Length: 335
Image 1 (cartoon, rainbow, N blue to C red):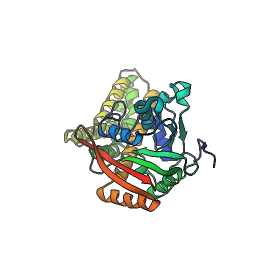
Image 2: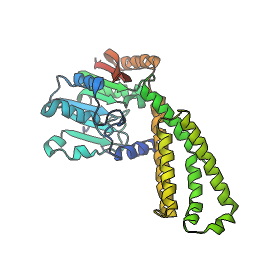
Image 3: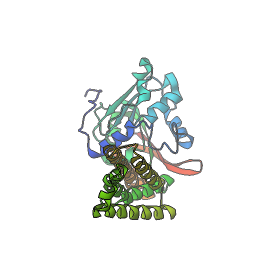
Image 4: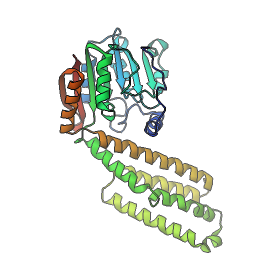
């Protein structure tokens, strides 16, 4: 089998489009508010341990790489001794930091978008280390475990960092997914704002008499005000990960810009439609995290899955940062 996969091995799905849009915004990883740059603390220490003993002669496969947090961390930790890396993701990935590297270094890290972990286009026994950070648990774990075992050499190692169902990250994601659902939909705050835009544009043009003669305009304003009041009450109760307050602020600023003539109706609609897509994408990503985060029982099942695939010496741990539970760490060896 050719060791170089086609970058579009699978057509992009709705899920991959959501993640492609996220990675195109430039975030290095999926937790930018927790780690402004790359991962620190116990997560960094975990990967430093997995990379120990590897050098430029070795090969590493990173599954669910996103914008390449682990390949970059390997480069930061090991420098010229960092292993050669193939980094795959089901989404489209092309991180700016990688294109900015010197050619000699850039060629040692290869990104492959639209490649699925359950069907790896690499030869048997090709890698010394397979890694995944907040990615493995999103896949069909039995199929991915079998593929990871296949592409690892005998004695090669598997290192995983995965979401923990008891983590603060899981709690925040649940609140964000619920909040996104609250402001979305045909009766949600965002749609009420969209319905109000034509009438606000009329008011900005000075067409006050026409507005007063149009019952639909009054109804749109009443519906928007009611949705805004309900949103405000929810924020006041503390049922907010920050997303709801951000949504309210964005909409109010857009309304003010429309009323002040700084944007016209067409531009306001386009801005709001794009923002609605952003919120919908955040809901998908947060709901996925919640669905795939592992409980204690889930970790036990994953242990069994990896053992069935042929892995041995399985060791699980919890990883924290600043006292906050960040996820599971798991190491295994290809028997």
